[in-house]
Length: 574
Image 1 (cartoon, rainbow, N blue to C red):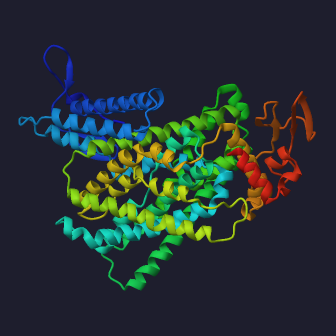
Image 2 (image 1 turned 135 degrees about the vertical axis):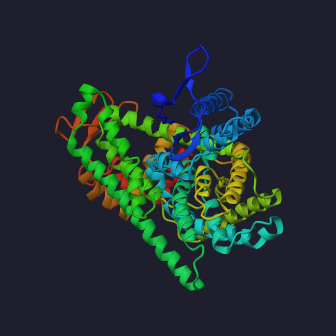
Image 3 (image 1 turned 90 degrees about the vertical axis):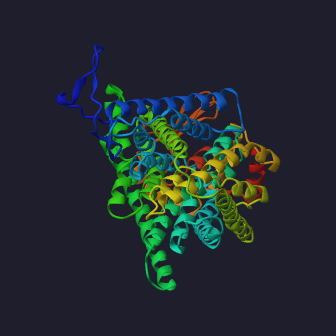
């Protein structure tokens, strides 16, 4: 947004058509960046920026929804609009030698967000939405794969990219990075953003296990990458032994990640208790859900700012806040607020991501510091680093004993997970915070990698899915598969303790209503009998303390289904 203060003495008449701002330098505050620019020129550029956003939204709808074009995704379309808009702006802008401040300087200031804005304004809703959308049953069924890829895989990827870049950069460019700087660069490029792949997964109803692996790994991977980025950046210029640096990195990572996760969970639990005891449902019935939505929106940003203020990771904190608020707080909202929060969070994330990709596209026209050969080597390093942890981790997990709901990591799934390693908003945002004088060099390389992976890997997602023969499910099959998983997931120790102790303390009691069509609905308790008839083919039951939804729906025998029966049910679903 644009915030301009114009005082009366600063206004000047031009001709007979009315007044316009006087062409003189003013202090203009644009999203945290103070620059001396012309007010009237700034308005024109902001109008152009909003026009790019409108064009990107319309083209995304036309390509992906109306034309069903699988070769370009919404993110790819938005990135292309930003790239084309930046090129057009580069051609149209001219320098007026009579003015004290040139229009090219104005354009350069307006089309590039500051790192502070990217992290404090645009990234929190994106990360919050990622945690909010996480599918519980499929996440826990693939918990080992997700955590191994996110933690061990991201560390391996950072080291491989950093070392490969450090070893070969002198062959392709005169500008070089030190070892600590190369590892920092490797950490930011390890932040994957498979938004195009996940969009194709949702459109085609791809195997929910594969979706959960790719989605869950990308969400935790972003958090781990950001923590590693700041830790490696802190080692730049550090003079110490290699063992001392390694110990410092490990201790800092544990402290930052665990502390940030606990902070995020505390915020999520606090919000659940707040909505549980405020009883805002009556106010919502009379005046609408705006109060609930306003309080809910505060928790989309407050954990991030709090964590950053105490030198923790705001991204990790907001991720766990989103996950815990979906688990606990969502059930304490009124039904209108539940519907609006889903749309509000998705809208904020969509707009924030669109702004970042447009900004990236327009910024790509700034001076490029690097060489095509170095960009190609960086891309190869990213692909090699991705393979260096996906396949070894997959083979390691497959060598362990299998107990349902754990599943084998099939080879087509490994191929798809490797292919889903495109880079996006997180990597670009981190490049804007790269410390030292090499920031423009790193930003140029990161922009190139993001452009190639979003357009190249994202556009080839559907053909690769077809080639690998990844299974697809109907919505009814997905629901059946989720219900089949739930009794087994509830046996997990952490889930069992959450269901028995934590959730009852944070969430209002509710009744589970199964309608005639088989759909499930939670309603507030009115009558206290545990079972009551709603009509032919319908009934409702209130689960006892510690009883899961699936156990109410399937009966207590659902928790005693053996492995063979579970495999049969899952194969029927797929």
